[in-house]
Image (tube, rainbow, N blue to C red; front, side, top):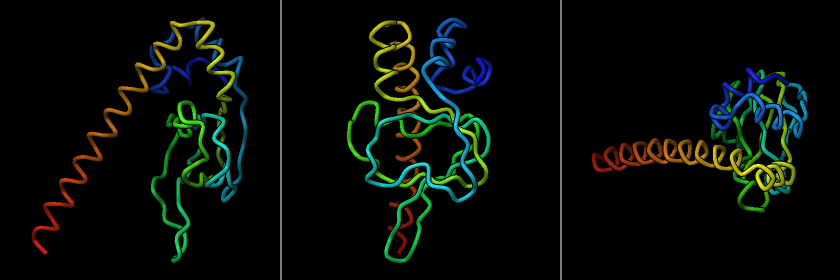
Length: 152
């Protein structure tokens, strides 16, 4: 794992070089083959994943089969909700192709935030910006659906 990669990931873009090194020290790189489950719905949520290379499909299994909710590509992240809500995973994460991930355990990251409040603040600020953007996109999609529903 290198600092340049982390700097391209929205969660860590505001960190200094030294702070990036601290993040690198608490994570580990893992490789998954196409179709391999990274985690399943209802698994314990205990880590955050950054996509180094490849892509990950986030999906739910419905009566009619798999429903893909999103396909995430390099420099994206997932599993972040488990940092704040110690609840089971809400969906499956599956390697969409051969994929390299950087995994950070919740306990290690929260301990680092406790030891270095600047890292925690910068991370949370970036996280809030991402959530705000996602909420805006969801609202726009919802408004489009409601507009289309009015024509039916």
